[in-house]
Amino acid sequence: MINKPKVFIKTFGCQMNVNDSEYIMGQLEKLGYSNTEDMSKADLILLNTCCVRAKVEQKIFSLIGKIKKIKESNPEVILGICGCMAQKEKENIFERAPHVDFIFNPSQVDNLEKIINNVLNCGNKNYIFCDNTNEFSLNHVPVKRGSKISAWIQIMRGCNNYCSYCVVPYTRGPEQSRGAAEILSEATDLAQNKYKEIFLLGQNVNSYGNDLSQPVTFSKLLELLNNIKGIERIRFTTSHPKDLSFDLIKTIKSSDKVCNHIHLPVQSGSNKILKMMNRKYDIDYYKNIIKEIRNNIDDIAITTDVMVGFPGETEEDFMDTLNVFKEIEFDEAYTFIYSNRENAVASLLPDQVPLQVKKERLWKLIDLQKGISAKINKKLEGKIFEILVGKKSKRNIENQFSGRTETNKTVVFTSKQDLLGELVKVKIVKSTAWTLYGELT
Ligand code: SAM
Ligand code: SF4
Image (cartoon, rainbow, N blue to C red; front, side):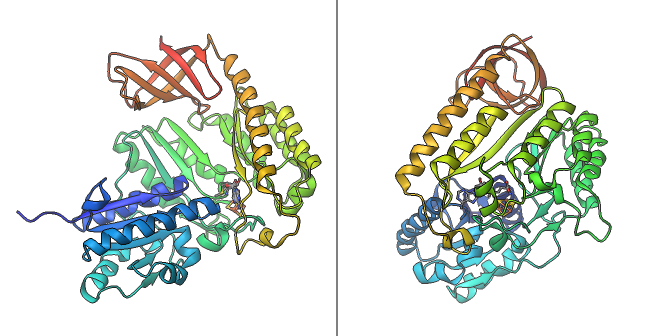
C-alpha cells in the first residue's frame, strides 16, 4: 500500500484565515494528502499567516526558523507560506528564510497542484503565487470544514477603508464581493448537510454587494439567507460603523434566524484619535448607532474591538475611551495594543506611545470591561435561553458540553445525552465575566 503524503497546516489570525485553511485542506485532500498534527511527520508544511500585529509576525518567523531544522534532516519536505504576511512580505520572506519553497495566497488554492508539482520537479525556486485579481468565487473548491454544526461563509474579501493603522487593504487587496447566488447555493448545500448555523465573513460586511454588477445590499442578502430551510442561525462579522444602515437594524429585528448580536468595532473613544485612525465617524455618530440598535432590537448583545496606545493618544484620549466603555457597556470587547505596521500610514506618525504606557492602559481597560461583562452576565442568572450546542468539554470533563446563546454568549452545562448540534433550552444558574453556566430545562 502506498502511504498518502501528509500535510501539516498551522493557521494564525482571524476566522477568515481559518476558513481559508479549510479550503486549502479540502483541495489538498483532493490531491491525495492527509492531515497530520505532527509537523515532523509532514511531507508538506503550510503556514497560513497573519500580520495585523507585529508580535504574531515575529512568532511566525521564529516557527519558520524551526522548520529549517526539519528540512535539513529531510530535504524532501516542502514548506509553503500563505496568508496576509506572505502577501505583505513576499520576496523578503525568501531573503530571511531561503528554505521557504513557495508563497501563495488563498485565492490561488486552485493552483496548489501546479505549485507543489513545480517544487517537486524543479526544486526550491522561491515561487510566488500571489495574484489576487481573479473573480472571487469559491463554490468549485472542495472544503474540509472543522465543524459539522457551524460553517463560515466568506461573502467578500479585501477592504477599501484604509484605517491608518491597518495592513489588511495592502495584503488582501480591494473589496470584492462574492455573487449572492453563489453564497445562497453554498448555504443551501450546508443546510442539506445538516449544518445549523452559518457565519458570514468579510472585513466590512456592510458594504457587501457595492461592487457587484447587479448590486445586492447586505440586508437583502440576509433576508435571502433567512429563507433557507434547515439553517437555524445566521451570524456575521465585521460591521464597520460608518456603513451600518438602518435597513440592517430592521433586518436583524425582522429575520428570525439572524442572531441578536452585533460586533461593531469602536477602536477609540476619542474623536481626535478616530480622525487620525481614518475611521470616518466620530464618537457621537457611533453612540447614536448603538442607541438606534438598542431602541429597535430587544436584548441585543453588542461587542467591539478597541485599541490602546495609537500614536498621539494622551491620557485624556484614553480617558475618553474608558468613558465610552462605561457609557455604552459592551457585552464583550477585544482589546489590542496598537502595533506599528509598515505600509500603514500611522507608523509614520510622531508621538508613539511607550510600550509600558500601552500595557498599563490595556490592563485598565480589560479590568473595566471585565466588571461590565460580569455585571451584564449576572443579570442573566435565572433566565432561560436557547443554545446551539457546539462543543464537548475542552478538558474532557465527562458529560460537559458548551453552546452559544443567540447573543453569542458561551454556556457550559452537563448532559448524559450527546446533544452536539442540537438547539436546547438551558436555565442560567451561575455566571462569570466570560462564561455562563446552565442547567438543561
Ligand atoms: N475589518 C474589521 C474592522 O474594521 O473592524 C477588523 C479587522 S482587523 C484584522 C481586527 C482588529 O484588529 C481591528 O478591529 C483592530 O482593533 C485590530 N488591529 C488592526 N490593526 C492593528 C494594529 N496595527 N495594531 C493593533 N491592533 C490592530
Ligand atoms: Fe483594517 Fe479598517 Fe479595513 Fe477593518 S475596516 S480591515 S480595520 S482597514
